[in-house]
Image 1 (cartoon, rainbow over the protein chains, first blue to last red):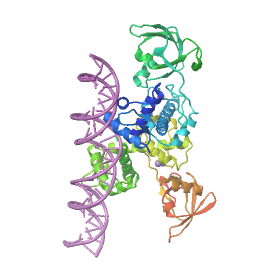
Image 2 (image 1 turned 120 degrees about the horizontal axis):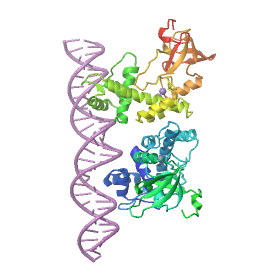
Image 3 (image 1 turned 180 degrees about the horizontal axis):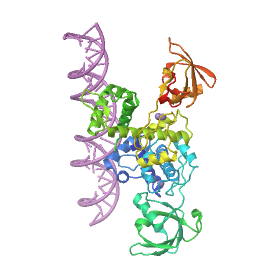
Image 4 (image 1 turned 90 degrees about the vertical axis):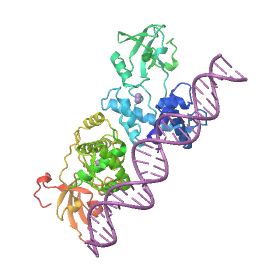
Length: 232
Length: 232
DNA sequence: TATAAAAGTTAGTCTAATCTAACTAATTAA
DNA sequence: TTAATTAGTTAGATTAGACTAACTTTTATA
Ligand SMILES: [Mn+2]
Ligand SMILES: [Mn+2]
Ligand SMILES: [Mn+2]
Ligand SMILES: [Mn+2]
C-alpha cells in the first residue's frame, strides 16, 4: 500500500513525464519544485520508489516511471478527476472549489469505490476543467489541443480545458464569463507585450499571457482537431 | 488542523465516554486497547491533546473530553456515518462493506463538503447500521434502546441498530435474514449457556451472546421506547 | 494494613518524511 | 579546456507516532 506522499510523487511524475509534451523523464530539481520540497527530500524518496520498482533511476541520472509506477500514478489522477466530477455534478461545487477537495479525496484507495463512483457519474470522459479521466486500466486519451497563446489573429477556437487549476485563475475565467466549450475569436495580437484581444459571446476582452497560456483550445471549425486542416 | 491520528483518538474518546452508558471518562489502558496501540503511546498522545485543550487529564488520572474535543470527535463520527450512508444509498455498497471505507473518508476535513453531502442524502437521521448521525453542531439524539441479550422470554422487539460493525458479524446478520426494523420474538432463553431462540419472519434461530450482545432493540409494541411501560 | 496486581509513566529506540549545510558531479560558457 | 554555474548527493537533525522495557503509583485483596 502506497502512502499519501508516495502517491503524490507518482502523480507529479505522471504530470511531468506523460502529460508534459515530449518528455518522458525528469530531474530531481524539477520534481522538487513541482512538489514544493527540497531536492534532498526528492533524492531520498526517489531511491525508496526505485526499491519498490515504481521508478527507473540511477545516481545523477533522470527519473522516469516504470509501467507499475505509471499505472499507480494514473490511478491517483483517475480518482482525483472522478471526485472533482462528483463534487461538481452532484454536490454543486463550483469548478474553482473542487481541486482542493480532490487533493484529499484522491488518496482514498478502494478500487471498488472509485469504479462505483465512475458508474454513478455515468462514466464521464472529462472532469470539470476539461481534463480527460483515465479509465479503469489507467489508459487515457490525451486529445489534441493547443494553448490560446499559440492561436493566431483571426482564428476562431473553442475552449476545451484549462491548464491552471488554482482558485484565482478559475475565478478570473468565470469573471470573463468563459465556460468550457465556448467559442473564442482572436481579434488582435499585440507582439510587443503579448496582450491578446478576444471576443467571447460578442464581448471583447484584453487578456495577458498569464491567461492565454492556461487556456487549451481546438479549432472551432473542425472539432476533430486531430485532422485539422484549417490554418488555426 | 487535526491529524488523522488525533481524530481517531477523539473519535474513540467519544465512543468510550459519551456513547458508552454512564461513563464520562476513561483510562489510558482502555483507550489503548480500543485503538489497538500500547498504553505508552496513549500517554504521549493524551498529553499532546491536553496541550491543545481537547481533553482534560492529570497524571495518573482519567481522560475526558473538553467541549472542543467532544465537538471535534463528534464531527469525525458525523462524517463517518454520512459517508457510510452515501456508500450504502448511492453507490449500492452492502452494510458490511461501508464501515471500512468510511474509516478513510471520515478524515476528509471540509465542513462544506460534509454539509453538502448531508443535503444530497436528504439529511438522514440514521446510518445503515441504525446509528444516529450527529447534526452540524455535533448534537446527537441517543435513542433509548437495549441489547437483545437484555430482553426476556416472550418479548416482542424490533431491531433498531447493531453494535458490532465488523464484516463477519454483519454478514452473519444478513445470513439469518435480519434487517433493521424487523420484529424479533424471543421464544426461549437457556440460562445455562445463554443461548436464545428467536423467531424472525416466522423462522426460528438459535443464537449466542456473541450475537445478542450486538443487536440493539426496542419494544415492538410501543415504538416510543422511552416511555415504554411494557415489561420488555 | 501490608502486599500483590493492575494501571499508568518514563526513557530510550525506530521509521517516514522532511529540513539545512556542505559536498560532488555534470553541464555550459568563456 | 578550464572555470563558473547548475544539478544532484550526503550527513546529520527534527518531528510525529509508534514501540519495548523498566519503573512508579494506585487499587484491590488477603
Ligand atoms: Mn484538480
Ligand atoms: Mn481537474
Ligand atoms: Mn462504521
Ligand atoms: Mn455505522
